[in-house]
Amino acid sequence: MNPDASLIFPQAFRWGTATSSYQVEGNLTNNDWWLAAQEGGYIYHDQSAGLACDWWNRAEEDFDRMADLGLNAHRLSIEWSRVEPKPGVWDEAAIARYREMIQGLVDRGIEPMITLHHFTNPLWMVERGGWENPEAVDWFASYAHKIVSALGDLTPMWCTINEPMVMIGQTYALGRWRPGKRDLNAAIRAGVNIARAHGAAYHIIHDQVEKAFVGFAKHMIIWEPHRLWMPNDWVAAWLVRLLFNRLFLSSVIDGVLRVPGRRAIRIPEVRNTVDWLGVNYYQRYRIRTKLFGGRAMFMELGTRPGILKGPGDWGEIHPPGLSLTLRHLWNKYRLPLIITENGIPDQADEHRPGFIVTHLHELWRTMQEEIPVYGYYFWSLVDNFEWTEGYDPAFSFGLFEVDFETQERQMRPSGELYKAICEAGGLTPAIVAEHTPALLPAVFGSVRA
Image (cartoon, rainbow, N blue to C red):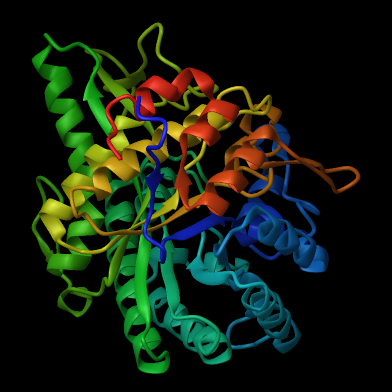
């Protein structure tokens, strides 16, 4: 190991964190995730977000924590149901509060990335058919126009939709999110409308924001066959990879949605409506096929002994998958890349420091191949409400632990590590030696100054 070696990122690299409105703001009762909690059966202990991290009243306290970490970027979302509580009715006070929050980031030298949609839908939209209704495109376009008009002067960084295939799959195909549908036709209808909504928002942002830089956040997973000797596992892994990783992404670049076994659907208005690709990367799954099972249950997700995995069915922690994903996306699409989410559920903070170091090591190695990655947004700054996992302690993602009864924050060791990395602009031997000494040989053994 060369003791003088350091893995330093470009000076303009964005060191950030990410959050979403329903998960941190608190007191949101006008969207479908609140409704799911009331109906029961979808969320851990039927919890709603409740007060969450109370960002609506105290976000600036966490902004100060971001500044102390040395962050220069943060990704946050606008809550559609808060700013448009009824169709065409705008809450100007709520919009003003969002402006105050985003200005607060700017004042602290933290570049905001604004996400327009992060899973939640207003109740009035849900009552009218949600994303299956073609009118949803116009509803979303109207919302985007209002928000961009109000906030567009504060940042050029915009993310239209968060993880569209997660939302489509969980809501309309697998039935795990409200309203619990298992209907491929519904999934296709929603997917086309979401793609069109993204395209409409893309053009609205570019019409109103000087030097706008617009993309969306795509969850990318490594899908591999569980049994290397089983052809069915290989075919199943290929199919899931196609449907989950590629389908929506290709549709907004090519302007054609190609679902296997279905007639191609042309959506030319969304073609090339991407300035950058957002990568949400967390895990690897191994696909095992089954001869018998219920509808949509011909396969199951597996892991192998001895490999670090998350709680429940979270999957395997696989840092090399980040570099594999980035190489594939760059080689296929030739678009700038941003890591819009990357993190690990780890309440004890036992594995998070190593997770951060190994994933940033993979990212640095990838960037040495002249693959343009413009930023890294860690998920998440603080523990928060984690969708179907609710406030299950096993699904704690924060650099700061949150006591949801008192709203007190406590920086975890991984927060100290990330602060050192942000201040240094990368990984140094001293940082790794202090926080994850066992990783020194793997990270720096082959590096030459």
